[in-house]
Image (cartoon, rainbow, N blue to C red):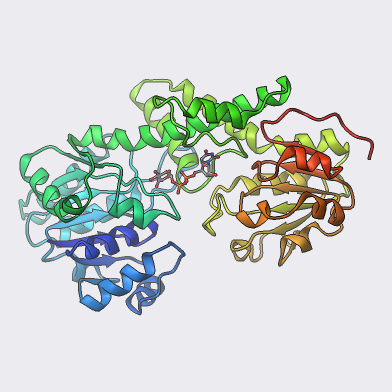
Length: 444
Ligand code: UGA
């Protein structure tokens, strides 16, 4: 199969490399010339385990190539995957201008009827708009060519994207005619031959809704457990044991029940907001998701509230913040909850001493007042308090006795539950751990 991928960001590049790995001929096209030059030279512009290897293998085998020219990429292919960004607009709705531009480009340049496949996360009924855009362009050019529109959402997590693509939990394909379904089945056949998973063949609108519903449900699961965490703190109970015991029920499952600082990243916050907007446009008030968002905002402001409780004034204090990335295993800081924590501390006049093992380069000239630390120990040394914002393994490895030695005041805000609360108390630390019984404020 000959495949074109429009937009080689995180989703597009992983998809391109994985389709090449499955034996297809793939060309990736992107408007960013620097990215195309780097990729053509075999350099992957972001960290994703296993991706470099399959990009290099695809380039070497001649099955994978990159270009900045749509006119070079589109003619001759059977399928075009649209993987461009859908950034938030001011009002929370996704901006679909790049999707429309990609569709127009296919209509202008395709030399045969192709399948135009949405992989970017888009609102339900975007498929119809793409179809309309394709038809209008075909009319304008007088070609009369009819392209098929397909929705094939991705469910890949950053840090696990190659594995999630090559060994997915399910493949979802939405199309409105048999020919398009047959084409997508051919594309996925090499994957299904070696990996047994459900293949959900449905219509375009249903497939579009599956993606938003999945992300919104996972985000709601996280907000649910974060609300339970607040109750555990007030009631003197342990949220981790609650989550473990709930998770033993196969109907619930333990995944995505880790209480913490709330969800972040480039997907959940944007997708929940977009889903609320889409539902409202269709005439449904998705109040449950508005509450999911509210609890998420509350989760992000938990550290500053706990700091005030444990040390009264945060003004003029030095606070070590451990972790900036939105989750461990990535240097991505898009919508990272740590950003809210840092902003709260700065707003209160505290000095932030920030450490992250891989993500510090992302804030080159943002926050000149924030002290960037090369190690966690450097951030902790002399700080009045510490907030853990990302659960990197190296933070788990810091012993509470060492924390007590390094900190000026013994105040610990463990928003990701990386340390054992009993061990913290035994080391003489005044600690708040997410979802754990509140300790009395000790005399500092
Ligand atoms: C998410 C979904 O997990 C993917 O299935 C989906 O394809 C992707 O969005 C997308 O739409 O493209 P990702 O954003 O990489 O993937 O990150 P997750 O691993 O899902 O984590 C999202 C956020 O939730 C992180 O901030 C994480 O710290 C938080 N989280 C996750 C919790 O606070 N508690 C949990 O139990 C799990």
